[in-house]
Image (cartoon, rainbow, N blue to C red; front, side):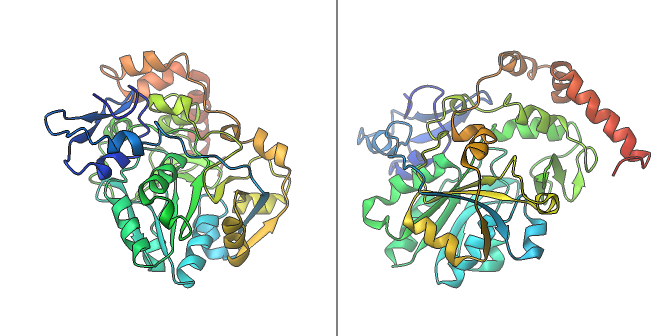
Length: 367
């Protein structure tokens, strides 16, 4: 028996935190997640079914304003994947006496933590390119809210839905939410298979990044897994939407209407100055007055944005990623062939372009 429909689990892990009998575990077969109930432990309280966002989608809200811009702190902006908006919001929120909750990578796991220490908050980020592990975070958020504190929760839309469901209506006024525009997320087992080809593992590396500004690539311990400036085959597969878990292709949150106070992502297709694009420009979609006030309070450069252009350049603001025809073949082949071999055969043209780029970089002809 599963908490939600077979292969529709988003991996928010809310059901695990809700269950008082520890009767639920996540089965990850790479193709999909499923929240499976141990019927010997289950007491049929139905709490997991009632709270699960896949069974009870939160009400979505139409945006009240749209912006593009960046963190005015040039030092942090230079280190951020895009315009550094998440950290600008976190910094101000902590300065105003609140707590911030988001994802970080540590000890081989992408897990969630909550803090009112800005230095600790600087470690947050990087979770939207692989499924993270929020187990245990929802009770911690509720505990902080019950103590009378404000909490800013930054995560994927499915995780925002989960934390809102867990804390309930009583504490929504002190819960502030920012969701990330998400294409979809693969199982961490996919990432492990990719890293294994390079004699690496999530458990042995200290740091991992999935992009350097507009350059999409895996960077492990400050070194490009292939070469800085060259997209690796994990990235090629991810960007085409090949490797996500099954639920992502029917995502309930991929629309212009959102469930958070603020939605942030890249301002793809922006017409601002080329130098600003190089430094990173973010898109901000505001759904609530709470969100509007957060943006206005933070040290953020706010500029107008062409809404239709923004939506056209962010597909997940209108629809989920469509499932790829070669996806089934990929998951069959991954049982017996290497990740890179499969992706090269399925995306020859793209892979060859990156191979040529690698040669040019090594010859010093391209930087």
